[in-house]
Amino acid sequence: MQSAKIFIHEGVIICFGKTFTGTFTEMPAVDWEQEIEQLDLNSFLKQQMKEKLQDYLKKFEKNVLVMV
View (spheres, rainbow, N blue to C red):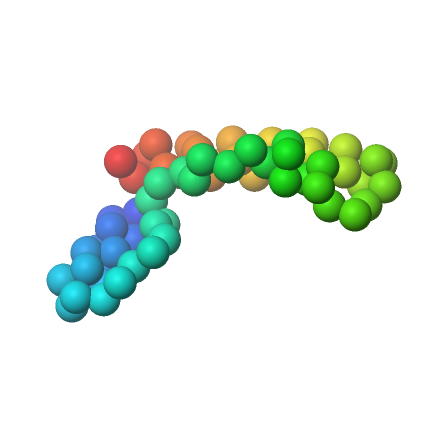
């Protein structure tokens, strides 16, 4: 199972005393709308990114909930 492997990888990294500054299993708290607005792109591209981002965030959130 892919999600179990991710938890194992995170645990192994920590057990070996390595600094692990990220995570594969938690959704980061980011204001994605604000991040997109700060990009130097026209409004049409920004809107497309926001729409596509929602699809990705839903998939990611679903996978995080399955893993926990």
